[in-house]
Length: 212
Image (tube, rainbow, N blue to C red):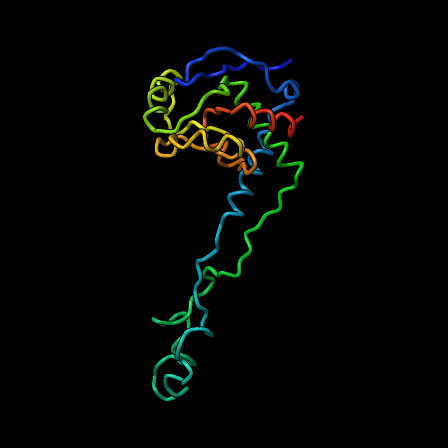
């Protein structure tokens, strides 16, 4: 069993339908795995730039502040102790932390299947006709406003997924808030954040081969 989706014309209106992703008909949406892959992707994006100095790295503090006995004050060996103002930081963030989490290829493909299947089940997938091209923003926004209103979603939650050969057809989409995803560099975390997918025909065919 395949899924029937709308094929959109230049004005983002349904002109016909097509059957897609037959291989996903019996595939279950694996929510737990999807969450794990998203968490791993977001973790891998962490730069880990936050860094604090420990007491041995702070400038100064080489001399004992006062002698050990006889002053009536508590003993101290360095003015750069963590309990002193200007001293080092205890258990602070270090830029040596490795946030990387491994994502198996099979897990990534399974997550991709799950996010596509979820959108198909919620009727949140369409395809663009091969003749569609948006070179100016006005050409795209003419149909975008009515399309977003009909679907009850914001433009920023719509994702157009294209292939390299289709890239030049979407020069007028950049400033509209609609997300543009290259099918060769998809991030599951970005796909999950979108509520509606619009594929180009070549991008959809590529994904069908990948998830088959």
